[in-house]
Image (tube, rainbow, N blue to C red; front, side):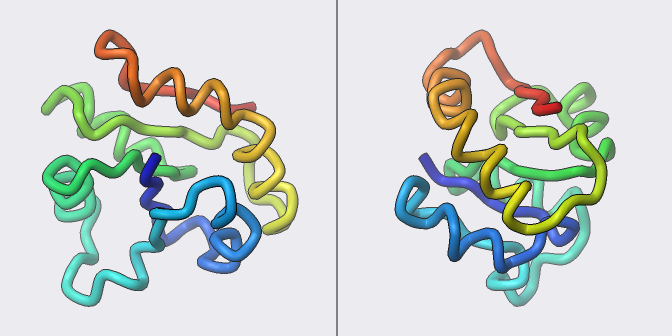
Amino acid sequence: MKLLLDENVSYRVLKIIRARFPDSVHTSELSSIHWDSMIFFYAKENGFTIVTFDEDFYELQLLKGFPPKIVWLRFGNSSNLKIANKLLDNYQKIKQMTVDSDLGLLEIY
């Protein structure tokens, strides 16, 4: 499972989740990709699931479909540890969504 953490999720979260999500990256590691639409299409072309607090990706998905799939964090700004723990606690749900062709969005509260 390859997660692409949006800019509104700290890159520090990767250090905590990398053992469980080893192929994950943060948008800051992608030098020329800055806008939501660019991130969306990069994720689609490279098999990433986007992790974000941003509703814009959900709206892009409504217009363009999926992939990419989206993990939408709906619990507001939180510590890096809380964000990482939410992702780790929902590992099975994230995994299921990534393999189910009928699912494109997972909301985590």
